[in-house]
Image (cartoon, rainbow, N blue to C red):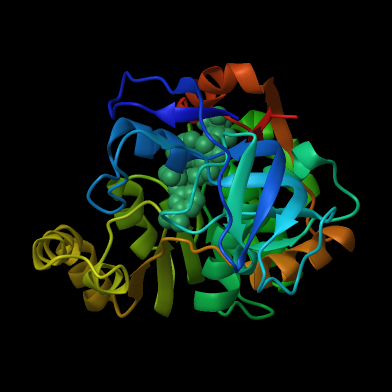
Length: 333
Ligand SMILES: NC(=O)c1ccc[n+]([C@@H]2O[C@H](COP(=O)([O-])OP(=O)(O)OC[C@H]3O[C@@H](n4cnc5c(N)ncnc54)[C@H](OP(=O)(O)O)[C@@H]3O)[C@@H](O)[C@H]2O)c1
């Protein structure tokens, strides 16, 4: 089968298209024929080598975290899926590789594809929707009437997070470029802040939760818009010692993460708010709930660009610019 592999880590490296053997499934896995794969910032960061300490993939390996496709083989212990099922998912860490024609995926990482979306639309959903779900539902436990600030509303995560927070009954503020305001209003955002000309710190006050996805300066300022007891959940770092524990990191990595997050943890403590780092996890069960919200018309997807499989590097480069409005997808079949 054809696959795009990371041959060497590096900021200027491209993926290499190679002919590799088809994966062999384990007993709790299914073989998915991939129709479309979503591109994520995580892919560009892994290729650049930025994630090598946390996710030490040995080169060469196939990149890619999001897929939509059809089940063509099932392991002996698979109970949820049968051949012919249309599925989607974010395979778990160390089992990635969706920039390929086929992938063996644990059934626990998959869900049936929403029946009102195309394969391309579906492929852009898993990683960002699971991130939004884990931030707002699992950790944030967002309740009706709360005020939530979601940064970068026009990005992959932001678009789902805004809609999910509205569904949970929150008032939602977001930052974006002015050109994205009409789209974000339609998705339900209540307070729109142009990040190029306005300072969100001057506009927002007494928020219950911030979903931080930007740099450390933005993170620092986010602490000031929270009410006492509020929460910042950051998906762009810095990772905490708790996260190091979660991934069973070495003592050295634990020390490093403890040091790099010390500043924000102290500041949060002083202000009576909490700081938590989230690195999303795969979950077929959570995707099932997301499928329902998509089929009920509560969460809409936005695909910015679709590329042919042969142009996967171009698609990655576009995502790396940080300018995508919604998701970027490669069409494999
Ligand atoms: N920890 C995790 O589990 C996890 C999961 C998913 C994502 N992430 C991280 O979260 C971040 C966002 O991910 P994503 O997939 O949503 O990214 P994305 O889709 O690439 O975001 C691009 C969007 O961000 C907007 N943007 C850029 N800078 C901004 C700023 N300073 N303020 C407001 N909006 C801004 C851009 O708008 P303009 O074009 O108008 O500038 C663009 O529409 C990335 O760093 C990613 O690695 C982490």
